[in-house]
Image 1: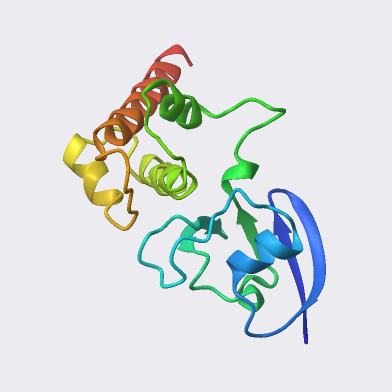
Image 2 (image 1 turned 90 degrees about the vertical axis):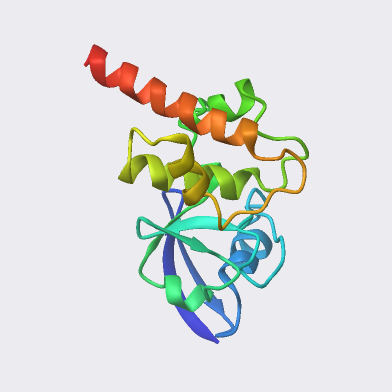
Length: 160
């Protein structure tokens, strides 16, 4: 067993974990954060995407011990005081989900895109999300949701 200290969604945790434990299993099984789904265990689908120290990672390809001393943000850690982020609202309002299985990973990947490129073109959104698979929506509404969130950010900047 290996002792780790990690902050997840703003809460500090200390645990003894097996060195081979994947971060996705640590989040779900140890911490009960089931908003990060297990999609494929091969890093192909992106459903399990989280942030580790500010960078998006597919948590099925990262060991929990690699997060030692780090900070993890899951989709469950985005809302503040029960209030969704504009990106989460946009996914809801623009119907950027159907079954919802891929949605946490899509939101986390889109968040990373909007941080790097607050004014993306539709093709840039598609390119940024190409590591995340959806089997339901056909992606149109997902792209629309990300673009709507970007517009909201622009509106917020203009009012500031």
